[in-house]
Length: 76
Image (cartoon, rainbow, N blue to C red; front, side, top):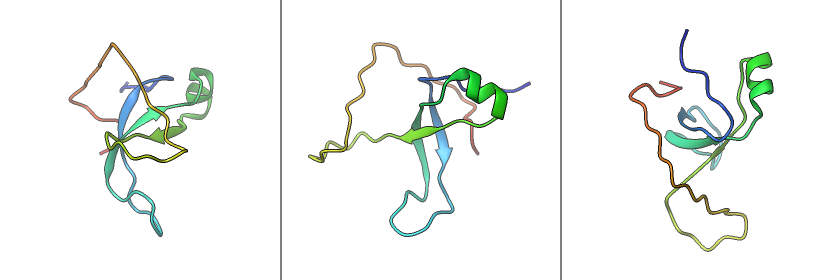
């Protein structure tokens, strides 16, 4: 049994392949879906995150005092 992401986890996702201007590489993402959804569907809904500080109205800052890391990313 492997790692099962839970809501609010930050995971590494390979967003390739993609089309247009979408992300095309491995990036961190925040798990947005509830744990019950993750368990029942074996899927997660994520939101890509970045450390770039751009002045865009749709960007939402993320603050955390806890940082959890793992040598085993969710997506390889």
